[in-house]
Length: 216
Ligand SMILES: [Zn+2]
Ligand SMILES: [Zn+2]
Image (cartoon, rainbow, N blue to C red; front, side, top):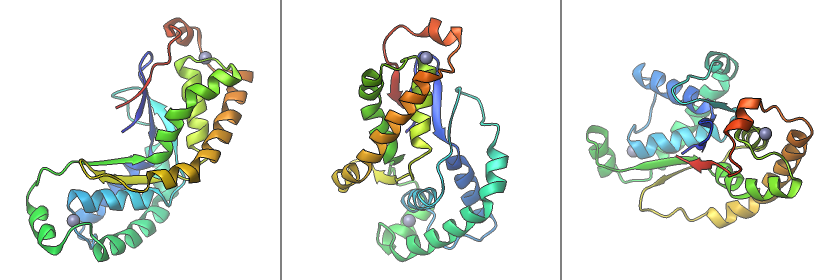
């Protein structure tokens, strides 16, 4: 899931997601990925890897590719590969299914839907409007995106892969763990954006006074 700002179609994304997925595909096609490759195991592996790397959020418009993917891939390539190697050992040792399922799901699409999201994004969305209201910072898409990105890039991500219909049990604990950090960074970000907004006339023209943030 990703945060989208509807008026402007800004699309917020941690671009290391793409780099990590591409690296896993590359290792797998070279026969260098030593674990089950079903959707559950792959989502767990992507989440494990991303949780050990710095977040690199930026917004793009739909259909655009982020221009700095290659730069990220070069800069973090070794760290990504190390994290994937460790993660694949864990996934192999503790798959979230039994051996029978592994044999089945390697060959067939068993209809399982797996969602992966950075829990920090959920908290940011939950608190962003309150904070910008309090600080009285501009609420156009550009400014809200800037506050969200400021926050997301300063907090170690916490990706969780969950399977549709299966509840994830640790949400309350995560809430306590991340809430203070999220609020502090949102406040800092909103103060900075208020003092120095980067919006253009077009941003302001598109803004109708309503927050247009949503998840897709
Ligand atoms: Zn598996
Ligand atoms: Zn603005």
